[in-house]
Amino acid sequence: MTMELRHLRAFLAIAEEGTITRAAARLHTGQPALSRTLRQLEDHLGVRLIDRSTHHLELTAAGRSFRDKAAAALAAVETALDPRSPAALPLRLGHPWAALGDHTVPLLRRWDAEYPDVPLELRRIDDRTAGLTHGKVDAALLRGEVTAPGLVTELLIEEERVAVVPADSDLAHQTSLTLADLTGWPIALNTVAGTTTLDLWPSAVRPTATVEVINTDEWLTAIAVGRAVGISTSATPRLHRHPSIAYRPLTDAPPVPLHLAWRRGTPAHPALPELLRLAREVVTAH
Image (cartoon, rainbow, N blue to C red; front, side, top):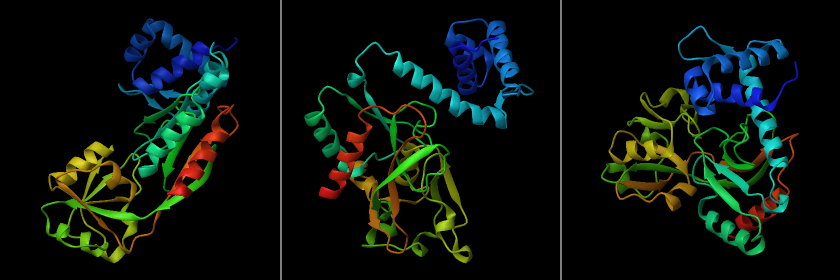
């Protein structure tokens, strides 16, 4: 049978909600009808997309691969059919944390001045690619190594690392810190979109404890209450000042690259070249 957009929407809703019940409620349809739609899609593709053997549905390897393609295809169709002028479509810029650091406000102000008819929407999405591979944004500001397939990246800047410690700790009394200074503390690790791993330390002197979090707010809280210390980049202290946190230069850790990324092979937002140009100019000027 012919595949329709409803098949993609059904699959993506199930993948995101984790159960047929919640996905059906989200799509305002019945559970049997949604299950049939999923089976039709799987029969068409000739693969099982979702493992139904547990109460909480899980994507198969084929399902994980197809999810990104389905999201990108649906986003492209919705963009093409938007009744507004293509020039007026919002340019959605995602980031998992810290955006463009202290360059964020200059970028947004210059954009508003030069392209007032094209809204630039800055969206924080707690995801390794800030929603880019799922079609939730048109471009994303991503730090560290970008390994997701199907993305094009442009290096904008390299940011120095900083140690992030409780303000009332002995570490806060020092003007700068090294990796060795932090080994006596648990390390707060953002497992969703962070750039810090224990591989930063030599294997013989790695910290023995970690505190895993899934977003910037949880990461900041763990440090502020004294449960851990963290490592970030120079963008963080400029955007996340906190009375219970101190930032100190970290002298022996490599810098972190900051990229502008977008999807390869899908229709790009017509204003993406202008965004790349302005981002380059802003980071170069400051």
